[in-house]
Image (tube, rainbow, N blue to C red; front, side, top):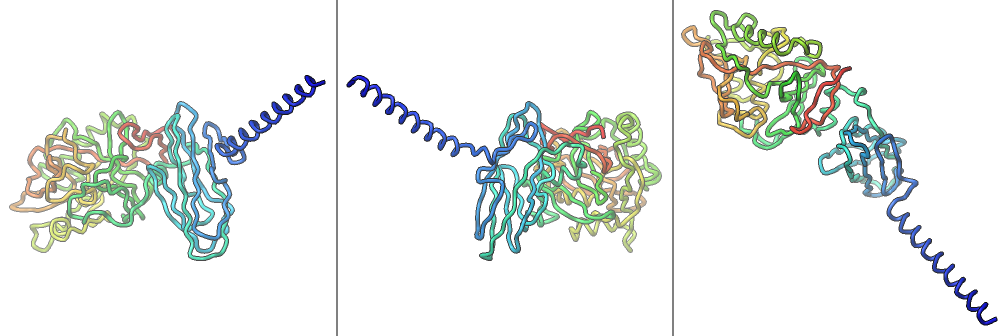
Length: 401
């Protein structure tokens, strides 16, 4: 009888311990992963640590993570849905991304890359000046690359800055990112400074993104000069009939013709408007004296598949009349000064285009009849799709539509 009683006590004790262990384990599990807010979309796992839905009446912060479970890079989007709010701001940040705006039902990130077997954690802060409740839902999903153009991906991967960190006309030596301006075709976005995510691999060459054109096409500059150096002109210094365009066309027919369907015909700006002194061009005063560059063409437009940088684009990229080896157009492997297609001066019937020297400096005293480097510029069609994130290790690459 006594033994049976002891057995019952032992059984009850073990049962109690088991229940406690299960309860503690369940609480711990719920603390670590709340399965109601853990979602799987293809190869991505999204963990909304504080829930995917939110409802607050004060400043608040929530976090979530995105896990790529595959051995390939993937793309995703983030959006707000079912938002009810009147005067609420949000700020979304990760280690490599930051965006702030007014809270509304909207796509925050249209397409962003996540590397293979990687986790990205986001913090979302809400700020309000009112005590009224606001609510909504955060949604993260897989985005296939076919849904977005090259321009869409660039804008997704870069926050657009409202102002430059350095004065235009002075050296830009920091990564100033992507900035907004206007060109002949609409709103344009250009890179400035020591940018590290504007790299493109195309036609077996390395390129740098100069800007998104107003029509959505993408302007690229070769990250080197071509082997054939040449003079700008022999008889005519009009770009459309110049020696340098002949050299560029020969290189295009040899190196790029197989990729012709991805390269847009573009109206390159050849600034050949003389001032009243008949010695200096309008670009000289605009750039050298006033330091007011523009992507709106104030000269002759030449329709071509290939061209050169304008001096305005170079100034916006971060160059000045001083040496600069810390902006994206500088390449220490370029050992020859190279031409732009902007005019500086005309003296004694000798034409002087702007050039960029081997130290990244703008110069205006080189005769266009001298042999100098040639650095091609092309424009990728606005419907092109890409993979990659623009870094040196993972440059953008154009894929089949």
